[in-house]
Image 1 (cartoon, rainbow, N blue to C red):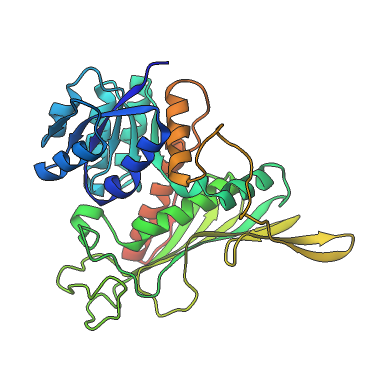
Image 2: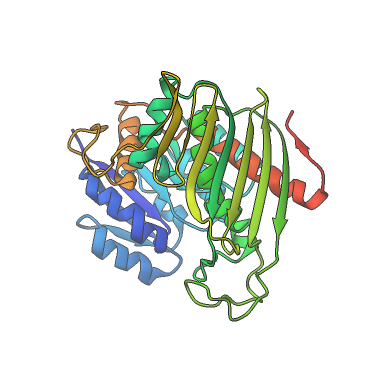
Length: 359
């Protein structure tokens, strides 16, 4: 089967550390084009990951004019996701866009519409769905082991681990802080487990309590208070149409020892589960409470024959098989759209002090 040919838009940290190594690990894709506004980054990426004769660009529009590119990876700051993704889809390319999907709901809706109009595959890079514990728990949820899931927590809490590089602290470029950066992973994971994408209303609170501090004890060095324009913490209370409740907790710098990222707690009518101390499933059997802790130190199900168990590689294989028409996409853009709707509603509710209702 012919190899797929990919273009990378944005050759910074996330592309260099995650996307490009994972694409290479699949052995199914030739990276033939690299674009970055800093030409040296594009050239470095082409040297390390590029196929023979790979081209480099500083303007993504020129990359999209290449007719032989099948796939495009959008690995840029959040403010460019919609523009570049829609342009790539309109140019006839399949797209994987880094999370979060977009800055707001309107942008995400435009991305979904462009994918449908061009009959192209669009997915968002929520790689935490492909962790061994996530895949195991999803199978249990699909089999109905937990019953009806009516209460959940989505947790993305750091104690003092504010990302001080790139544009993470720039609200104009990113649209928000920990809520849109790591909270998005926890919320995506939780809604996916519940298979519930119908929010009714949201109440949100957003805090700028620590971002003006100095001598911070931050894991990646002190942040610049003048540049820290996004929130340091944000929380959401989400009620779904079927009455289920989801509490979302997100922070880069909370004075709390309960720290955990991309984790979910689920409570159902038949059993419960959480990822707060490894994966734990709890319930009652034969009149006795039980706790099950699966062992992930050994092999599990081969979701893709011969594949690495790294989540980011499994994520790529899901995307590539969907592009080839050989499998169903795991992260559907319509699901990522709902995540974006809820995140935007939390920010809006925090601004107005009122609940945000969905029509």
